[in-house]
Structures are given as structure tokens and as C-alpha cells.
Image (cartoon, rainbow, N blue to C red):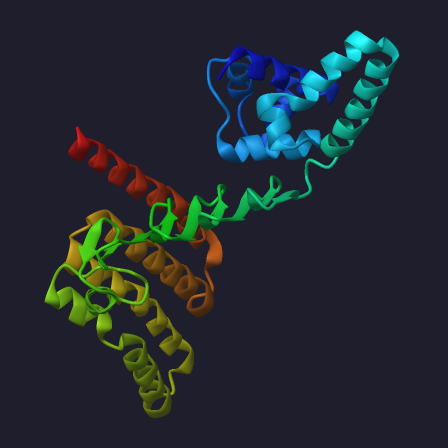
Length: 306
């Protein structure tokens, strides 16, 4: 980024009465990033440029090329009073936009399209000649539909990535399928990929229906309607075992089985034996075990990448 644009960013920020920290908070970036922009060490990306223009109440052209600044310089040479009035008006307008930092920002033009940014929710929508782009930075989710196809990315630990390719193939979580039908045949409705036939058959089996049938039989024949409810805890355990058979992830197996077993044991001690104390202590260990298992997975991934 050239020094002239860096100086314009400094001037616009000061005219709006914002410090670097305040501007960074408005845009959802670090103060160091704002400082680098103003020292010409780096450039704001497209989304931040749009947010800056909306925040300062100017067009992108004015922000990038300084058309408004050049006009102000001309006016300064001609009349100091006029310049003072213009700067005051600009500061007032910028302050008005700055005061609405928690409200959605809009930018609409024929050339650039429609851009809506909600810094409060971390959501962005861009509609233009290149397609439609929707993003939620807080959740790490992005969807883009355009001439290049469909692109869906979720950056969470259990998220998925879906891209359509020019040759008609589909790439899901890094694996390419010849068609949507092939992807449908190899994945379940959650996008989970089965590595083995046993794992696929295990997960496709209607185990919840079997549990419901067993509950009815036990209730009708033996009258154990209350105790029969504990069968519900077998459902997550069943699918966790299926995932383990298919992918051999011991940490994920423990992360599901331990909470189910801990909650079932606590309810038994409380409802059946009338001893909720000190049985409730086991509930505290659930987040500890889950955090430990996630840490183990991250360490394992780092080891594989090293």
C-alpha cells in the first residue's frame, strides 16, 4: 500500500475522532493491524476496506484514490474557511457512522454490488458480478456461489468443506467424488464419510427404533417403565462404537461414552438409590475428560504433521 493511502487512513480515522484501538474494535481486528495499515506496512483486505468506507461515510474510490482529499486540498488553497467547514462536516458525518458501529453497514453500487456487514454478529453478505458470498467469521463458516461453482467451508473442529469443480466432480473434506450421487452413496446425511463397509452398516442400522421397541417390551412385560429409560443412553454409545469401528479414533469414543455413562450413573444414584450426594461430583469430570480428549487429538495431529 502506498504512503498516500496510509496517510488518508490516518486522516479519516482522526477526523472520525477514533483511536487505533477504537477503530480496531469497530472492525473486529487487532490494533496492530490498524497500525500497520497506517504505516503502509500492510493493506486492509476487501472486506475491511468496505467496512472502513461505510464507517467513514465515503465511497471506496474516495478511500482508495483520495478524490475527496484532492478536492479538499484545492479548497484549502482557495479558501481556508471553506476547508474548515468541509472538515467539520466530514467529521460530523464520520462520527455519526462511528456511533452506529454495532449496526449493519451497507454499501450498494452498480459496479461493486451489494455489501452488508454486521460487525456485531460477525456476519457478511456480498452480492456482485462475481457471485454471492456469505460469511460468519465468528463461526468460521463461508458459502460462495458463483461462476466457479459452489464452495462451502466450516472451520470448526467437526466442520466440513464442500467444493464443486469445473469438471463436474465434487470435493468434500478433501476427497473428490465423480458425482453428487457417488458422494451421497459414500456419505451419510451429516456428511460423515464411512471408511469401511462394517462402519457404514453399523451406522445405518436403525438402533434408536430397536431401543424404543425394547423399552416398550420391558415396560409392558415387566413394568419397568422408569428403569427402562436408561436404555436411551445406549444410543450415543452405539454410534460412538460404530465411529470407532470405522475410523479407529479412541479419543472420540471416550468423549462420547464417558459422559453418557457418568450421567446414567448419577441418575441411577439419585433417582433409584436416593443418593445424589456425592454422586454429582462425577458430572464435574465430564468437561475435564472432553477437554483432555480434544487436547490428545490436537497433539496427535501435530505429531502427524511434524
